[in-house]
Amino acid sequence: MYSTNPQIQFKLIQNPDHPDFKVAIALYEQTFPAYERVSVACIQEAILAKKAQLWGGYYQDQLALMSILYFLPSQDFILLAYLATVPHLRNIKIGSQFLNYIIDFVKNQSKTLVLEVEHPDFGEDRELKQRRVGFYTRLGAKTLKNIIYILPALDGTKTTEMLLMVMPHDHNLEKLNPTIVKQLIRELYQVVYHCHPNDPIFNWIENINDNILLTDN
Image (cartoon, rainbow, N blue to C red):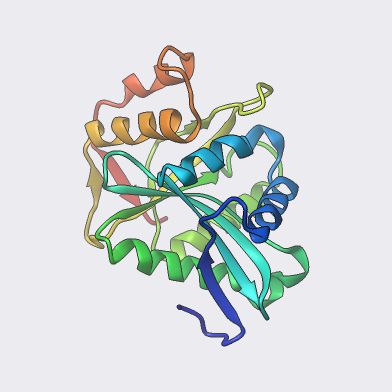
């Protein structure tokens, strides 16, 4: 297991009846606001159907991190949907170690890791959001240029402007075909967030007509 700290391990939590499943979900609910959270029932259903994975990060055998990955139907993309660390353990850098672990995990399958990152040009805490984008960029992520991705209002209150970032297994990839980008976004909306095909949130996707450049700045 990838770790520079022998006291840290990363494990799959595959059984919703496992005690750590409840601990991980509690951390998830404490960390993310309701308008960004998929329901626990949908998460459990996706895990049992092997469409998603719940990962736990352990420090001294105690759960210190949770993350949820979604395997999208196109077979090319894996979404890192959620990542949360127990607040008092953030200084051990378990989040960075997990990201490196998952980057290797995805690339070994010749897949592309997808990240949804809050757009630094919108909302509050813009400096923090920009630092987060820079952090992922330093790890090798590239931003889909000129794409303002709209995260659905998962509790029915408000949508969120996001960047889409990818870590392609081909480091030299400079652009994505618009058909691929449209398919990716539709799968995110339908598979992860359970949006109805007639939901107006799909409308903006039709404006994607040109190749999308991948930028690291």
